[in-house]
Image 1 (cartoon, rainbow, N blue to C red):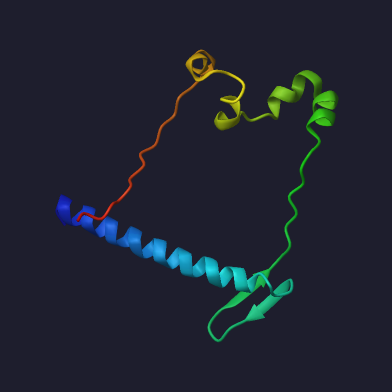
Image 2 (tube, helix red, strand yellow; image 1 turned 30 degrees about the vertical axis):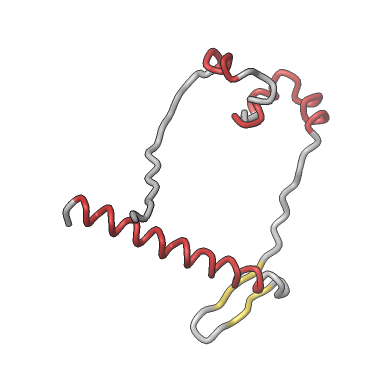
Length: 108
């Protein structure tokens, strides 16, 4: 495949994935109404489990860990921008990593 064909194929697949994800999301919502356990279709089976996500009391954890709190804290850039002006942020960056985002868009 040449570059144009690769780009078009990538775009087509991305559109199909988006449509499939929307369909999957609707079906998943209906399936979430089922009880916890294993359920069977004709070709597939699903297992539904309840997963708990605890939220910790930040003040209590900070009091308990004191200086060690920095070992368990992750900075969320969107939240940090609420407290430090964006022009000041570069001085606090210790490392920059990157990745390539590829966004397909149908041509008219």
